[in-house]
Image 1 (cartoon, helix red, strand yellow):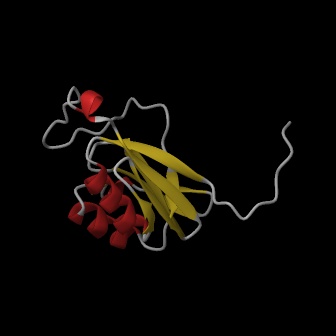
Image 2: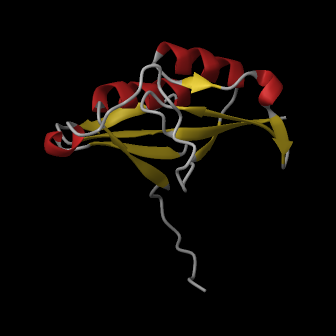
Length: 133
């Protein structure tokens, strides 16, 4: 077993994106994150205990990626980041405005003291949002 470390660094995730600007806007708006660093290859978003790096897929590879319209969620992905948020209704509005989606309230379930809903970013990457009950 690996020993835990004491650090002020934040845990986070990296999301690879065909359209870095659009995907970055989704995570900024749904999670209330601010751009701490931005360059052609990536945006570092931080806040509320999260760190999300939106990394641009190089053009030579991105050109081969075809995104369906409307976006088709990538349900087959083996990894799904989860984020605790203050209000799922606010997340739904922000997700819609930034090209993503959050499932309807009727699809929510309750788990470990949270109301849980899945959604996806503008490129179909599945994301889970949890609101404390």
